[in-house]
Amino acid sequence: MSEKKASNQMWGGRFASGPSAVMEAINASIGFDRKLYAEDIRGSLAHAAMLAKTGILSAEDSEKIARGLNTISSKMDEGRFEFSKRLEDIHMNIEAALAELIGPAAGRLHTARSRNDQVAVDFRLWVKEETQRVAAALQALIAVLLDRAEEHAQTVMPGFTHLQSAQPVTFGHHLMAYVEMFGRDLWRVRDAIERMDESPLGAAALAGTGFPIDRHMTAKELGFREPTRNSIDSVSDRDFALEFLALASIAGVHLSRMAEEIVIWSTPQFGFVRLSDSFSTGSSIMPQKKNPDAAELVRAKTGRLNGHLVALLTVMKGLPLAYSKDMQEDKEAVFDAAETLDLMLAAMTGMIGDLVVNEAAMKKAAGAGYSTATDLADWLVREAGLPFREAHHVTGRAVALAEDKRCGLEKLPLAELQAIHPAITDDVYSVLSVRNSVRSRTSFGGTAPSEVRRQIRYWRKRLKQGARPGKVR
Ligand code: ARG
Image 1 (tube, rainbow, N blue to C red):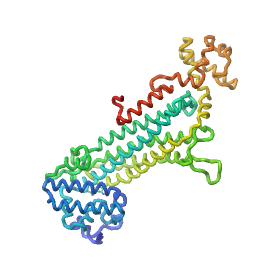
Image 2: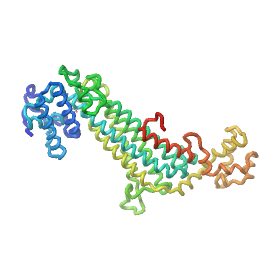
Image 3: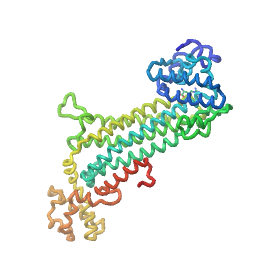
Image 4: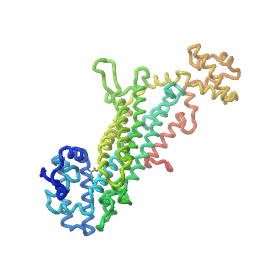
């Protein structure tokens, strides 16, 4: 491709000399927006076909343009295209290549169009497709979580508050908490897709155009639900990108919490899970070590996602309508967030799928720390008619006694329990075991295996119907 040192081909009439090197460096986006080449060509093909259909362009020129664009597209697919920094961005790189291929007809493609609506449509197409990829990746993660939750619907483990043993729960229930989180992420993703599903093509620079274009035709051709309704808004907002970054950040926060739990659970001190070799590394100096690097990196990469969201929010804040070059800064944030999130989701799906669960260690820990104390208090309310506050007090004394004797609540002799409160009977032991504690929590959304299995069935159906709640049958 020709790179004249002199005036720019596109606005050469107005500028006498080429841009300085610094100007070129700060202005050029081709280093990253080349990622949009397929979307740019799709947009141009749709635009050219529309121009011909509406009689703005001859059928002959339109066909020439389409052939040229397809040639450029294959060249790019095969990595044989030479991108030029002097041509600034992907739009001008492609237009210049087209002119070289087909001559003056290429100059007609930009009729009733501006780079402002061109970049808006390219980027929306890209973000929409990426968001669909995220939806699929979330579905895959949820599917693995549901399988593991079903497998462990009655595996007991300690439930924590303040990272202190609180009450026994099942591992299946704990995993289902993440299904709820990633399920909401998926729902958020679907909502975002619906909002970004409008085509800005035809908004032109900002005011629309006097040419008799058909924006509904290009919207349909590009797979959008409909065209956008305000040409100024079409070229000046990037909330679809912000929404993508926001949903990525929120999903990232969920992923990082799960990653942190995997890090904790896989320590020798906890020993709840073992990571497969494919998702851990060894130490170069300490032979006994197995490090949860993938989980740590999922935890860490959330920082990048949050950073990108704040970066673009800051770029967009206070921008006057309509287009400003500031908005060119939208792409790198989104591209990196997309790549990062895709990787995090894949790594988490792999780790969860391979996780080896140590049921014995979980069970042992589940009974530690007087985790069934609430069950004792509840028993006193239910069976002995005590007010909950008094039951709480009585239970506190039983815990103190067990601490004294260095034993579990279930090991306290009946006589000693009765010395604390005379209404206690032999029946109390039925609630002091971890298994019975868990089994008794049958409230809707509770940790009882029967309830966990019900929620698993619900989510399997809900996923089949898309992620929204609605009527799940
Ligand atoms: N590279 C530009 C961007 O990404 C394309 C739009 C340029 N429009 C303009 N009026 N200079 O935002």
